[in-house]
Length: 475
Image (cartoon, rainbow, N blue to C red; front, side, top):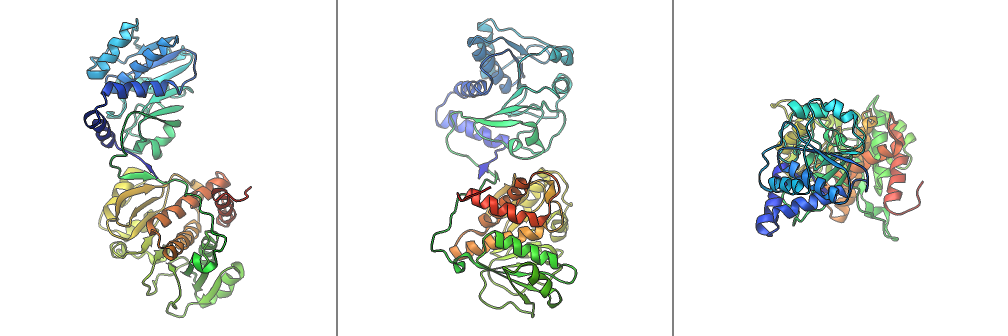
C-alpha cells in the first residue's frame, strides 16, 4: 500500500535526514530541483513562479539549473522580491550570481497570455496555508486554463495534508512530489488538480509514520495446480426476501467471481426458486432459523434480512443487518466486517454529526469509531477501510460513479465474504482480504469504463481483471 503523508509527517522525515543522517538541507533542495527539472522537456523557455518560502527556494534552484543548461528562464515573484531565509536565501544568491533577475506582474492574466513553454509553480508547498489570496489568487485565475504547468511538490492552493480544495488552485499538468506522496496527491478532489504525479527521489531514510494509505493492486496469486474447492472456503450467504431476491443473486455472483470454493445461499423460502434459477453455481436453501455447521464465513443482510444468525466465525454484515446503534458492538467483535454506505454509517454510529460529503471529515470519523478488532468498510467515493486492530485508514482509488447504483453493495458484500472465507481457510488477515475485495470491485468497474453499469456486468469484468492480475489469458 502507498503511504500518504501529512505535512508534519514529511517534515519529520526531512528532519531525520538532516539531523539524524547528516544530509545538508541544501542537498535535499538540489535533489528536488534537479529531479523536477528532468520531468520537463529538454528545451524551450520556462516561466518560474517563486514564492516567499522554501518552495520558492526549490523554484530558484530549478531556474538556476535550467539556465545553466542554456534555457531561457524568467523568474516571477508575487509582490516584490521576498525576504527569503535559510536555504531559499542562498538559492536566491546563487540565482542572482549567474545574472538571474526577477519579474512581477500587476496583471497576471496579461503576462500569462505572452507565455510560451512551461510554467513552473513554486509558490507554495509543504508550508502552504490556503486559500490563496491577493496576487497568488490572481495568478491562479490567470493560469486556470494553461496546459503546461509543473507543480513543485504540490499545486499552489492545495493543503498537502487534505483531500479537499479550500479555494483557488493553480492546476498542474504534472506534479513533482518530493520524496513521498502527500495526502493531496492521493485523494480526490485534490488529486484531480495534480495532473500526472511523479515522485522525485530525495535523500530520505525509512518510511516514517503514516496514518493514511492508498490501496494498490493485489499481488499476483495464481492457485496451485492441485488446489480444490475445499481450500477456497465455503461461504454462507443469508440474503433475499420477497421482492429482494436480486440482492441474494448479486451477493452470490460476487462471491463466486471472487473465487469462493463453495457458496450456499440461505434465502426466504418464497424466493428460493427465483434465486436458484439465476445462480446455478451456488447451492440455494430455504432459511430454517439456524445456520448449519460446516461453513468458513458468513455474509448477512442483503435483500431485506435484518436478523444475524448465531455464528462465531468471520462475518460480513451489509444492508439490513446494519441496525441502528449497533456499530460499536459489532466492531468490538473480532472477525467482523461492516460494509455501510454513509447513510447506514450514520445509523450505526448515532450521537455525532452526520457524515458529510468531504473526504477529510469521513477519514477522521472512521478513524474515531474503528478502534476495535472489527473491520469497517465505509462505501462511497474513495471507499475507506479501517479497524482490524490498526490505527491506519486505507483509501481506495478505484471505481467511478457508475457503482452508485442498486446491487453494487450486494456484489461487494459477496466479494468481501469470499475473500474472508479464503483468508480464514488459509489463516490470512481479514482486513487485508476486505481491502483487496474493495480494490478489485472498483477496478472491475473501471475496466467497464465510465458511465452507468449493470452490476451483473461486474462479474465478467472482475473475471477478466483477475486473469490479468494473475498472469492468465485475458482480453
